[in-house]
Length: 380
Image (cartoon, rainbow, N blue to C red; front, side):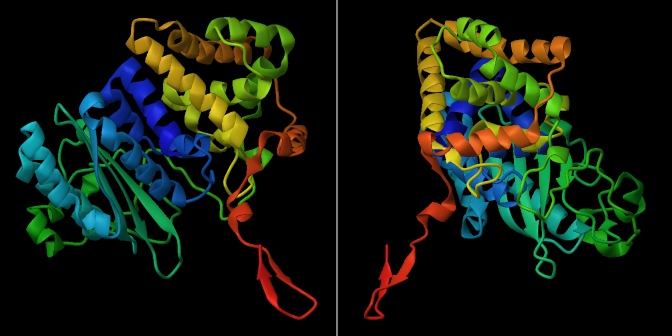
């Protein structure tokens, strides 16, 4: 996940710049799709921790080159955010105290000004060389065991106490006191006096992303026409040949399927991420849903992205340009032919070919238990 997340990020920055990446990071649907295409459980709140942890590890050695820095994280790492931001400010010439204040303010708004029963345990502050920033943080409700994710982007923050979020993601749990709602201005004479009035407002985000409690992926979770276009390009001979021509690469259908979905995460329009479960059909899920992660396909997809990026850096962008055209080609197939995926057949096919692709899940890492004829415990 660290390697693939880094490659996807670099591809986006190469094509669109750091501002576009921060904008996508603040979109909850795109964020969920990114986690799914990296092989994380598509429905899980754990996507937040895994994606931000993987990006921080992968981008840290490339921060100077890419102009993007990730501070904070989960638990004790979140508490270290001010120190990391001050160190970054010294290196880059930022106003460190202003960044620290912003970091603390976003955490306090989500922890205190939105009284929804969720306590922040993950805080990731992402800042570009030009000072633009995004925040992704997550809270946990100890009573229900459910999580809620909060997205911020500096380009969208006009006032920290008037609807500053790009999105808040989570299941509704009764009435919420939202003191940064646009109608809560009477209670906002100052953040330090924010408890002066408590207007009760039901939290209303412009877009709602709700993850089911179940682990399995179902047809209802996926836009079957969009998935059908990806599968058609991967497996229909003529379409496959044309896609290979775009990419200047000889690729098997399974790798082409993966790359087509990764290409959409890199180049797709925001409106196309309202079914993030679809992106789990790129590289599966670590919990075996919808199928185990195909390690051979993962490696081949990574190798394509790596070589494309390296060639683009030395003045040969043909493969990377082809990657962009692949996304457009899949959309055109979807529009002109409207193929619909046979959901059950796709799942059956993926599970059938999984062993040949070194399909793996977290369950494969757990030791099996056996007792020999003497009653002794053996782990293997």
